[in-house]
Length: 256
Image (cartoon, rainbow, N blue to C red; front, side, top):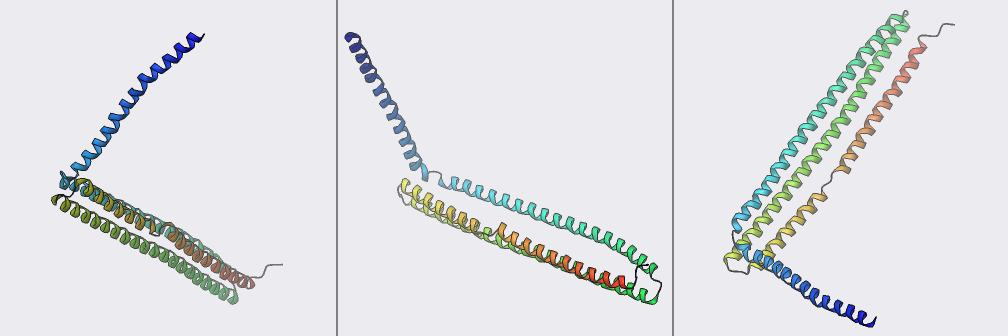
């Protein structure tokens, strides 16, 4: 048993002597290759800097084009949605006008006395005026909402465009410095680190500006204001209509 034990112990030691150097050998070249790759990238940073810079700028410009395309799509969609809503509102109003005209004619046909005819005429005038007031209030609420949204969109667009311009300016300044440093023989590693630090700072500034722009909450506030105005217009109309109907009924007492 003791011999077997010592044989196993010797075998483990032998395997350890074989495996550990292999692991060390494998790790060594990997770290060395990684370090060589990093050093190579740093040394080559100044080589072909202008060509790479043009490629970076093209990428930025392409993103700007995409932003403009998305803006146009959103604008067209918003314009179409508003037009569709306006058309539906007008269609509903036309239908209500026709129905109301029929009801007025029926009331006029029922009026046989001068008092009843005068009551119907007053009712028509009151209701027509109330409807006009309601529509004006609703149209005003919609117009105010849309103007607010448009102003917000314009403000956001101006802020984003300014942020993009500032990023481009910062990028160009970093590139100009890197190019000058490369020409002056500054260590490529230092040039690369300085350039990347400047670009990172510019990107963070752009991101902070973008996140600070008011979006959803402001539009929700405008929507709440519009809803409150529309609700008030409807309730005010109902109040006027109810009073007008009660007064009209006095001229048409129920038959006993």
